[in-house]
Image 1 (cartoon, rainbow, N blue to C red):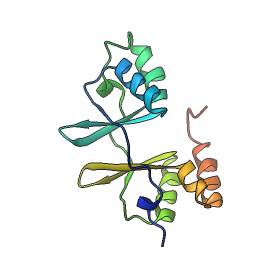
Image 2: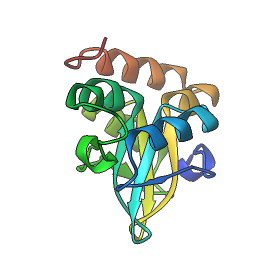
Image 3: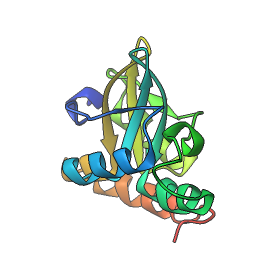
Length: 140
């Protein structure tokens, strides 16, 4: 049985929910990612994507006056390290998401993405997920 911890990226950068959007954007650029988990008191509280910064954040005003908590997604769909990869893939497909945050005891363990699953030979699963994600609203 393949489990998520065998596929996930575990050296994941995070930011504080109180950081401004410019700080988040700099972290994303430095890490070459489009997704940053947010923490408060060593517990995850949400995520911000590069799209959130542009669509939600810039629409509110100057990026250095807007906090991550103002644009973050709080109700994050998560998985756990020992979750079966097929189950994780179905979760991603059902919720039309491209990345699944991996959590254990309210602590971020990593993230698994469509690319991670596809790289490991689960091309059919990844194709199904992409097909479902593409059906989502505002996914251009």
